[in-house]
Length: 113
Length: 114
Image 1 (cartoon, rainbow over the protein chains, first blue to last red):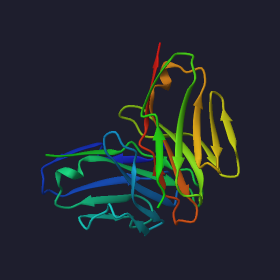
Image 2 (cartoon, chains in turn cyan, red):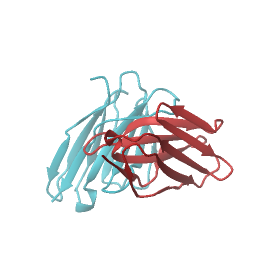
Image 3 (cartoon, one colour):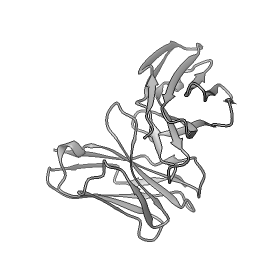
Image 4 (tube, rainbow over the protein chains, first blue to last red):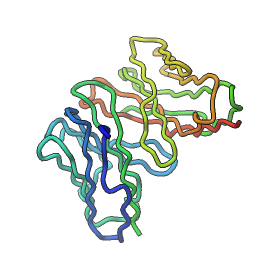
């Protein structure tokens, strides 16, 4: 499968714990995006990388959230001290250079108990 | 910032009928409008898109129309089939904003009854 992949697909954690998700974009896609989707809503933009540089962060991304893309390939999204309100589907997407089309991964569903 | 509104929130049609989903956007500088289909438990899948210099685009049974003056765009599905049942999201991209981030509508649940 040459599409965007994400791991894990599901994560259940207790409030206060830290979690980390991984996204592997389509090969040669230099742009990588993180979105969050809650039930019954469209995805909301969280942050964006061009190669290894994080170029934009949404106000939704509190200081408990951090994202990295150290070598311009895969990316990780970490949530520290999780809260029940963090429960959502976390989606990753990638695009090639300045092209508009974004291709999504299957997402990581986070449940905070 | 950009705001995208989508309606209806749910749509039920009989197999073989047409379905139309409409979206409006707020920022006249937006210039790219994709549509995604998301089946239960699966990733959003890009099904069609349109740029602001085009008024209509068609791909087999699906088409998208864009009215820049009114700031709205629509998805048209003809000859609907049960496998068209899914959640459909529209989105807009503001070209002048760095990174081409997508701003999504809230989604439309389409049910095709056989």
